[in-house]
Image 1: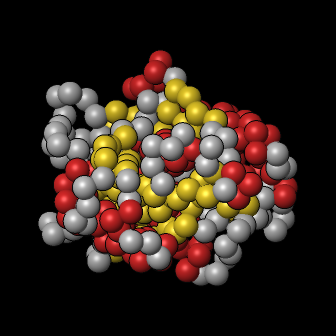
Image 2 (image 1 turned 120 degrees about the horizontal axis):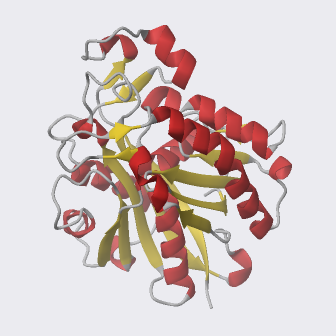
Amino acid sequence: MNGAKILSIAAERPAKTMSNDELPGKFDIDDAWIQSRTGIATRGVANDEETLIEMSAGAASKAIAAAGIDPATIDLTIVATSSNPITTPGIAPPLTNRLSLTSGAFDIMAACAGFCYSLNVAADSIRVGSARNVLVVGAERITDRMDWNDRNTCYLFGDGAGAAIVAATDVEDDGIGPVVWGSDGALADYIAQPIDSPYLQMDGQAVFKWAITEVAGIAREACEKAGIEPKDLAAFVPHQANLRIVESVARSLGVGESTVVADDVRYSGNTSAASIPLAIARMKDEGRIQSGDSTLLIGFGSGMTWASQVIRCP
């Protein structure tokens, strides 16, 4: 049986960055209010040309180049997204065509947990011999589904894409730890798009309470399965939902004083399935994490769904 590791992670961000003061909706909240409650100062907003496929292709091309592999050796493409504007086809098949690939291709719709779900599927595909090189993408255009006049959601979300190359390696060199994943469909209405509405709706207080109550325990279990103490992690990259949630979970988990905690939500907003690869890419670009660093990931969101694993940073 093979091992699996991440060779590269790359980001594609929209050209336009929108500050809190530039939000188009009409409501009685301002920059100070938004930052004090969410930590979000800006978010990327995709234009008409920055489609899910184009942003995914941009991130994927960078990840392929950084990994130093021949694109023709990619056996499988997995795209995590919740914002495909059409029911079928998914984003993955036209993305492979855009990249001149003919790999297996499918989408995973697990909301903000989608990237971690996809990493596990990629790693398991490699371990059983179904693939040797897998392209994993998290891509979203959440702003397409936002009501800019809804004061509960209008300032939270952003657009973007992140991509990773997951490759076969020796079992001893395995760089993706066991996953802890699950769901609670009884909470499906916490974050949902009603059938009679074009807009995403969220019970922010319920989501916040669930996250600060449940997420640290899930993350701790992933550390236990990986054989590492939270205090010994080099980095912690939770889904970038809200900076207050990120900081609360980090405290509850008990990460070390030297553990670097992702904060890309400040600049990108909540980018759902794209948030974890976007956060890792920023941390690498800023020199805050290095290749080989033990890094805990946890995605969580609509469903409710969650997935967590410890990886070695590429």
